[in-house]
Image (cartoon, rainbow, N blue to C red; front, top):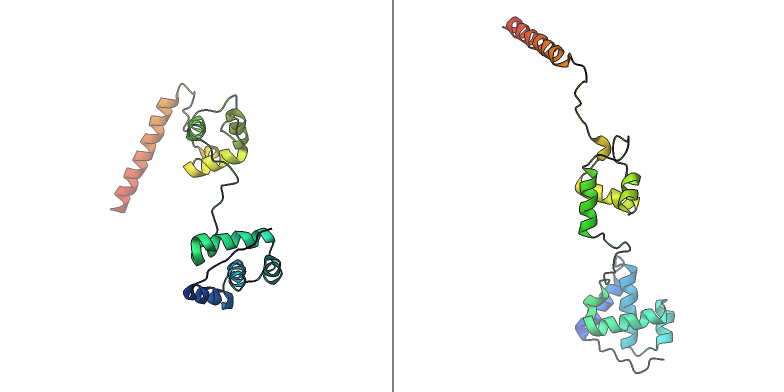
Length: 175
């Protein structure tokens, strides 16, 4: 059991804390924190603070300690927490980007997120996140493929010639 906790609240801090409690637009978590500090400064015990503020014992202790170390500003900000998902290392990201720009295995026409995830050994959502960050859309690649027709070159020249002639005729008519 913690005993002998003395929180010294200056007159300026008390004015700030009272303003937080009285502000109807203040976030509720800031109001609870300010109430905890004010009740502690008034000499209330932990059990009474828990009842009045409606928080747990560990919460009371946490905000008493935060106020003693960081003051009123410490009550108004939350500590940052590590991300739920650990970030991928740069090598894995580079491998996925490089593999996306190569042809997929087998008869497939483009990479899917599931296929890339399986090859790289990471999750589908990780592949999607990497593709989104790098602006990659492997399902939207457009490739120009030449015909296997041996007569293709002559046909192409004939078509282009007709197109150019039609353009020249149109320009002559417009004049």
